[in-house]
Image (cartoon, rainbow, N blue to C red; front, side, top):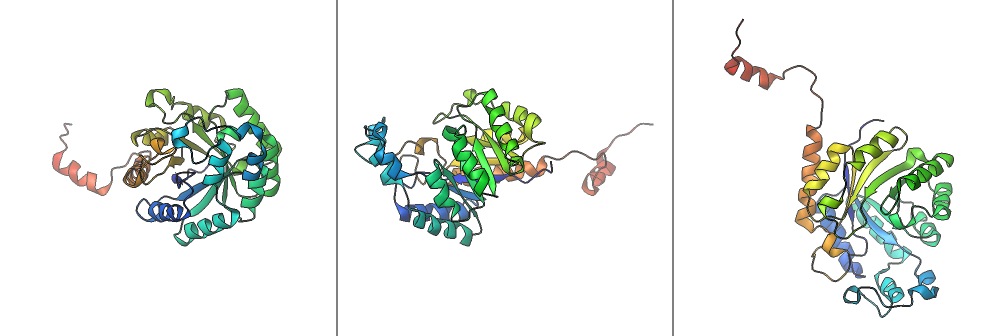
Length: 290
C-alpha cells in the first residue's frame, strides 16, 4: 500500500474530568500549541451502565472516582450527543479531525448521527462482533481498532471478520499494551513489524496506541511501520483520574508530534545519487586515488 504521512491522535478520553469547558480548552490546546492531527473522545451508554448491577459497586481506585459507585463515576464523566456535536465542530473549526471510541451500539448510533470521519473500537471491545457488525453495516469511514489484551489468534479472527464484511480497506489496527502506564521493557514493540508484514497489504494502516510516559518510543514505532500514533493527553498529569499518569502534557505532546514528523522526513531510501550540496562537499573534501 502507499505510504502515508504519520497522524497523531490526541486522546482526551475522560481526562476532561466531566468538565465541558475543560474539554474545549483541551481541544484548543491540542490543536494550536501541539498541532495534533486528530482529537479523540469516548462515548458510553450511561443508561445501560446505570441499570447494570455489576457496576453498582465502588470504583476499584476510590481516589480516582467521581462518584459513589463505578456507574456514578462513569455518569459524571460522560458527555451527551449534543455536547459531542459541539466538540466535533470545535475540532473541525480548528482544522482537525474529531474521533470517538464507542463502547456499545447505543453510543455508536449516537455518534454516527454526527457523521464522524473516524470511529475507534477500544481494546476491551475488539471481539464484540455485534458492535463491530453494526459499525460495518452503518459506517463508511475509517474504523480504528486497538489490539490490547488480545491474542494473535484473536487478531486473525478480527481480520477475517472485517474481510467478510468487505471493510479491510477501512481498517487501521493499533498495536497496544493495556497497562497504565506501560513500562518500556514490556512494550514488545517489534510486534509492530509483524503486524505490518502480515496485514498492511490488506488494510489501511498500522497504528501504535501508547500508554508509556516518554516520547522516544513512538519514533521507534514509526521506523517499524506505524503511521497512526495515539497518546492520552492531559493539561496536568497530577489531575484526579486513572489515565492522567499515562498521559502527555501539552509540551510533551508538542515535542512528540515534532519528533515524529521530523523522523518521517528522514525515512527515505537513497537513490544512489549525490545531491548538489553533497557534491560541493565532495569536490572540497573527497580524497580519491586512481
